[in-house]
Length: 221
Length: 192
Image 1 (cartoon, one colour):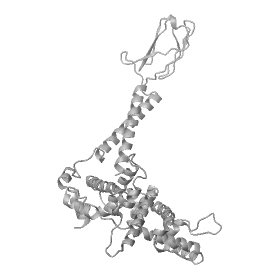
Image 2 (cartoon, one colour; image 1 turned 180 degrees about the vertical axis):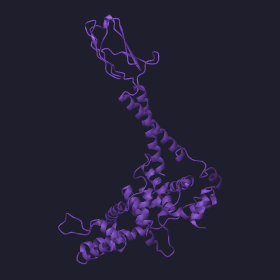
Image 3 (cartoon, each protein chain N blue to C red; image 1 turned 90 degrees about the horizontal axis):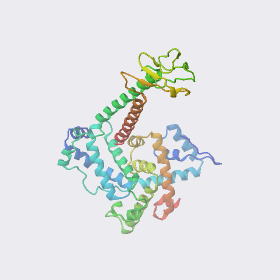
């Protein structure tokens, strides 16, 4: 705490210091400094006296008697029993929600990192370039990376033992520069991971937000 | 009975024990609420709400300063009320001055003194309601209810340093306001 206020030609004791001085809440050394300063500063003496008077007025405010008894009626108190009837924001549900939130966040992290690293072998983007000629070079990316391969018109290209991508080159595709093959998994069911990631993200955000709300509500009690 | 024993019994569902605590704290809680919101009817509601909420949440109070815990519930209820959209600002200031509950008549007091004291009491309450909420609550706890800095900090969940600075600003604001009504003030401030 600063002893003196700044910005004036004559330095005086700060308001906060005077306030604490009057409450006897300063250290011995600070009390001594204030006393020493006041011995030669009428302005600060006046400040201290004024503030002391304000505190005196406030402390003399009468205590107003309670207008009635606020005792809880015994039958109602039984119904509001403190222990068993936990409200819905009590600690147990909050803990459950926290676990659910942590689980959703971990699942999202696993799926997302697996998707990024290609661990699930189902990268949805396998660009294929089909050239103007029948033996156009096919460039594949993704996992596992396969060697470049040329496909003839009407030929099915199958690569990636784990997740197979099947492309059939037809006449009307000749001339296009980028064709996305559909991903075929487990006998023909098409699946990308993004809906799962999006769902997990939404679930994580919802649980996180609800947890935060409940935490604020319970800590405000 | 000792407060700790009453607390233990209350936690077991002993409503009579809890009501002993209510009787012990109802006046200071009501006074804090009254000074905070400035309306006796609202202060009554807040006081009742405080004791019901505290009873229902007793199982969350493990140990420590029960008084501080109870006053925290009360001050939070006051703040909730003040922040609610239903509170009409500056509505009850005239009523406050007229409210007889703000002064307690003494048999040895002359009618003139009683009138001056009543007006001063109303004016102080009006000045309190003009303070910023965070300064008002500190001023009420420390200067009117005589809580220590540490206990006020515990109630408000703020550092002691914050309590000191808010209190200092609140006192200064009160001094500025009170100095505009010197005729109501006793001795020192009137001549200052």
